[in-house]
Amino acid sequence: QKEVEQDPGPLSVPEGAIVSLNCTYSNSAFQYFMWYRQYSRKGPELLMYTYSSGNKEDGRFTAQVDKSSKYISLFIRDSQPSDSATYLCAMKTGGFKTIFGAGTRLFVKA
Amino acid sequence: GAGVSQSPSNKVTEKGKDVELRCDPISGHTALYWYRQSLGQGLEFLIYFQGNSAPDKSGLPSDRFSAERTGGSVSTLTIQRTQQEDSAVYLCASSAYNTEAFFGQGTRLTVV
Image (cartoon, rainbow over all chains, first blue to last red; front, side, top):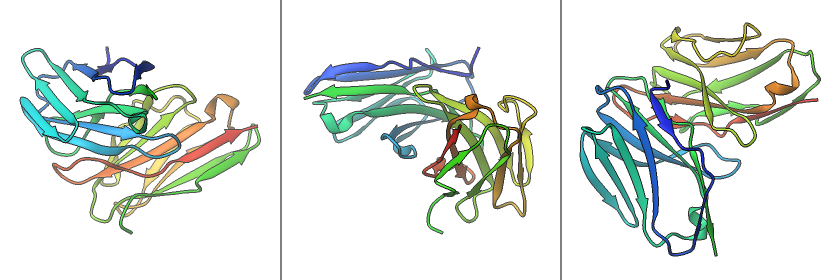
């Protein structure tokens, strides 16, 4: 079993929809949680970074961490075609090593 | 440099040849990671360096794959006797203590 599980998709939604992307994990020691966005033919870039449980909002994006369930989510409101990308979750216990999910491909149709 | 630099950006090689992929991490970042993304596949972990040592090599798919890092900086991923299934984008990332990982733009390897 992988430490971090992420549904690869693809996920296809109409423009304006609310998108929910999720990851589950097995290591209860993870404390730092991240979401990366990767456009086609580009390297992943950090989108959201949260510590421990709770919510963090940035514009149309909300990151949610539920440590009791070992479950993290990224919500995208009013999705746009420009949000079409691969979204990767990542987490770490602290220190250096980061563990990544495999990524979910999202398509937002105009 | 300001970001993680990978070279070459594209590489076409003949089956059976050896290739070397280079990663130049952000200055001061002691952690370095190599990943692979095959067409339509997810991100696949290959190897993690802490300084010059590699405490986790568990993702290297076969003994044709090796990586080294010298001076706590530049890393080279070597693939010997390349096969067509090695065709993928190879991504490098680096991080400092308690920071997020920063990725390079990747090397697109095509084995023909």
